[in-house]
Amino acid sequence: EVQLVESGGGLVQAGGSLRLSCTASGFSFEDSAIGWYRQAPGKEREGVSCLSSGDGSTWYNESAKGRFAISNDNAKNTVYLEMNELRSEDTAIYYCAAREWAIYGVPLDDNYDYWGQGTQVTVTA
Image (tube, rainbow, N blue to C red; front, side):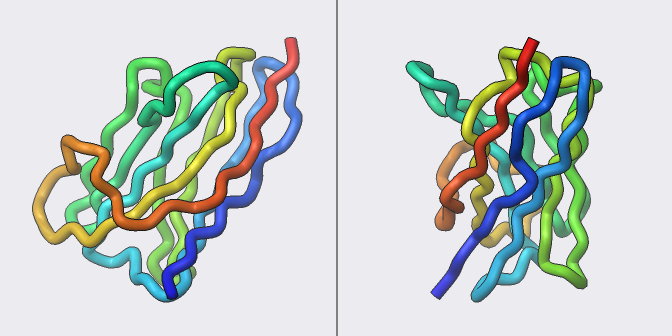
């Protein structure tokens, strides 16, 4: 059974930082694509960042560019999302998702096979 477990969420003041982790069991992050998504109350889920572990390609949405950084540690089978300069609009539940991916570059769709349960990030003014 594949499980993705997110951690690292919490309450932080605007301008602060958090590092989210996504650890997998039953699935290897080698040769895979891992995405971070978020969903704020009353809003649709949106992609924040993704990583192709095979070639290191990354993607960020416009809001995350320059503030967030995605990285992976294959030895720990964990992917991280470092979030800096947090804003109130970053408040959301953050989910990681994964799929096998042996192609260069990052996926251009949201067809991930596995999803975590999410971790809450709350940014106060």
